[in-house]
Image 1: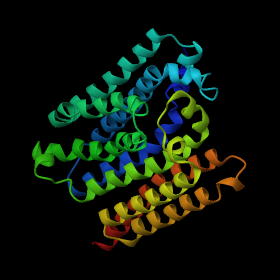
Image 2: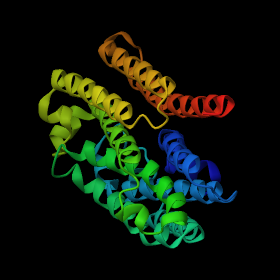
Image 3: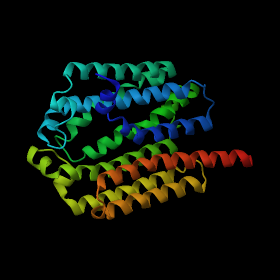
Image 4: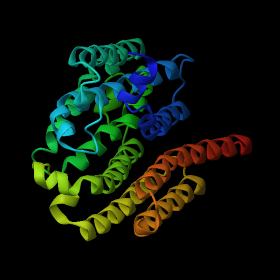
Length: 295
């Protein structure tokens, strides 16, 4: 199997969702604590490993569900174009990337690496039992900024970085905001499979509550993630708050106008992906401005 097939298997483009918030977590820690030049490298390798592991586990556990859905029947495991043996090998490689990188960072990062792995394993089963699966997916990505922050902060405080609540309120509300942001996106993503989900007993929110409730709830979640980012206000400057407000409005506008788009899902994906990068840019601009002014 070539590199292209592996990238398609783990949907590498979806890494663009979590990466900016990994970097936000790193930058917030870097602003407060000194970091080693290699810290960012190991954090990025860990993030790639975690993201790849999450997707591989999802594909392995959901292979029968994917095979029963015409939209996903062509996926590697569902179609048989990849063997289970290969999928397990890839999962092992991604797990090693995560664990080795965490080991290179510090003891706390390594000892806490079980948490995202457990969350990743549980997620595919959530859709089989409850529509709260969308929140659980949000939790998977909400761990990204928290993990990056701990990877740096634990170098200074050790376990006290967690136990003494150094992560509250900034990192807590950033991570909570990411959870609502991903949940809002995933509610709309699940619109594509409503009929199939109902027929196969998949507990998605749109299948359970319908189109209008999905629109209303995803907008409410968007307002909630804006509120979380506003409360976190990690740089106490207008730039981050303005960027969060602008992207919240952009996401809401796309959701409300979904029937006007030839490809609503692609449009929402691009706007949602852009959200994280705009917030990261706002954080960097604000910090640069503060340094220039000697604040």
